[in-house]
Image 1 (cartoon, rainbow, N blue to C red):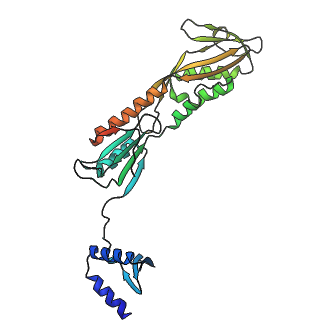
Image 2: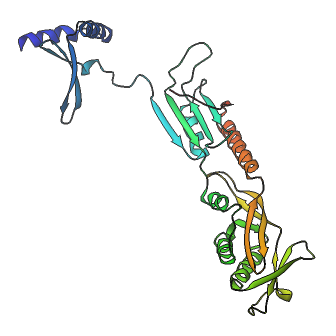
Image 3: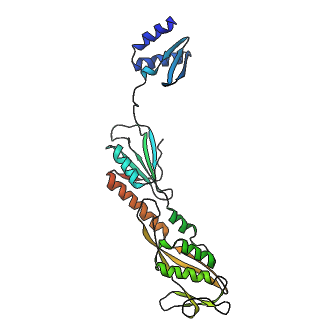
Length: 289
């Protein structure tokens, strides 16, 4: 034991670089083992075993890490910008992968400078996350629904529709629901340009519009945000129907949804540049390893 204490005393006066040299030499000689001792209240104590000598290495560990090693992912543009503003430097750089989903912004806070390289280990990501409302409308896009299914869909998502107004859409949904056991005998173009579906009232007497017609507007205007944390925008959808008397199926087709997505991704990029004053470079792939 006195021999071990003697070695410890001689090593205690060495700085970290000298100890690393000793460790390297011992490792090359095949006589070094490293281990750790779990001590209640003190955590794990790192040890080096050279032959029959045990050396406590904890005194050579710095009190603080030499640099930040972190990878953080956000789903909010605001939270992402707040984090960037807390840790950014003149060399911090943001890369954007925005040509197709998933739409991501990756910031490397300790990025390389013009002359010197940096560690590149402090990384924060923003992943634009779809809203539940956008998922709902896109999942049923171009689908064919029977009258009851379409009526339920309209009622469940009435708050997203801005034109026609809510009362008109509710009346449409209720009338479609009321006639789900009825037949349709044809269609006609109404004076306002909408399509009218004519119910075969000989099948069942129902409360409908004038002359037993259900007016189906050509388009819907829907207010949605594709991504969480970004303002809602208006997108149009065409009504689609398939009338093969006496059966009817209905649905809708979103008009250029990718165009709205691209615009919203661009808006997110503009917000990042404005809030952080950092450059954003568009890249198809970012390797942070």
